Image (tube, rainbow, N blue to C red; front, side, top):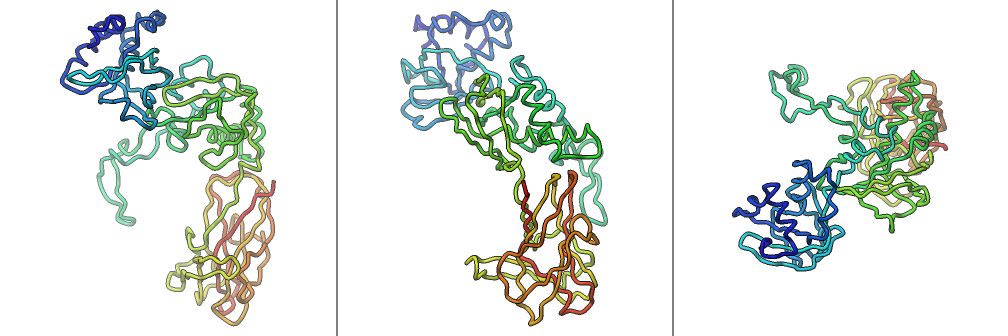
Length: 436
C-alpha cells in the first residue's frame, strides 16, 4: 500500500534501508504513520549515516497495533517500534496531522501524515546527552546511582531464626539504580509523561545555598549533598504542562509549591515523554518546602518496655471537630517514665511548635505526661497536665532542631510514678508545625 503511493516513495526507501519493510510485511498487525516525501528531505546527515539511529527514526512511525482515527477519541499514548511513545488523538499524532486517514491493508492501517515524527530523547536522556542541559543539576543527578535493596530476583539461602526473615545470597538482593528513579520519578519511563525542571548553574547554586542551613550535617560536603537532594526532588512532575498553559503554581510529588515565573524559562525542550524546562530561576520558598508533621499516636515505632497488654486503641467521636478518631491509651503499665517512641524520617533544621490532642475520659483524675524530643530523657518540655474530657488541640511549646537528621525520634513519656492513675499515656496525635 505504501509502495503504491508515489508521495511516500522516500519513506518506502528508508523502510527497505532499515529492514523495516520486512517487519511490516509480516502477519502481525500494524499502523504505519507515513510522512510524505517533502517532510523527509531535511533528515540530519548524522542520522542518515547511522544505521541504528535511522532505524529508530523510521520505527518511530510504526505502531504494533491497529489504530483508527475514528476510534482514538481520547489522547492516547501509542507505543512505536522505536520503543518510544507518541500521543494520538483523532487525526493528530504529536504535531503531525493525518491527511489521508484509515487506509486498510491486510495486516493493518496506513495513515499518511504531513510531518515526520522524530524519535526524541526522553527527559532523562536529554539531561544526560544534550549539551543544552545545565551541568550542575545533571552532575548531581548522575551522582545518585547506588546499589538499592531489591529482593525481586534474590536467591534465598536461609531464614533468620530470630526474625523469620529470609537470608539472601550476597550480591543477589540489590540492583544498581538511581535514587531519583526510585524515590521521585523514573524519567526514562516512556509510557508516562513528565514535566522536568532544570535550572541554570547559577540558579542551582542559589537554591542549594538557600536550603543548606536547613540541612546542616556534620560536614560541609554532606550538607551540600543533602540540600541538593531536597532541591532536585521537587523538580519533576508526573504531568505535562505545555508552555502556553503552564500555571504559575505547581505542586511537586511531596506537595511542595513551585512558583513558576514564565519569564524565567530559558529553553523549552520537547521530549518523547514530556517537556523539560530550563529555568534561570525556580525560587522555592522554605515556607512551602517544610510541611507540618503529624504523628498518629497509635502508629508508634517502639516502647521502652513491652506493655502491649496494657495498650488500647480506642475509637472515639470528637465533639469539637465533629469527626471520628482513633487514639492510644496505655493504662496500668506500672513503669515509671514509661515512654512510646515515634520516628520521623528526614528532620530538617527548623524551629517547630508542638501540639497534641489527648482525651482523658477513662478516669476521674487528671494525669501528666510530656513530649520529649530526640531522647526520652530530654527536658525539651515540662510535664503537661491532661485535663478531663478535653477534645481540643493543646499547645505544648516550641523547640529548635539545630541540625538535619535522617532519622529523628519523638517520645511520649509517662509520669515518674508506678501508680496507675498517675502514669497513663493517652494521645490522638502529635503535631509539629514548622515556624518559618
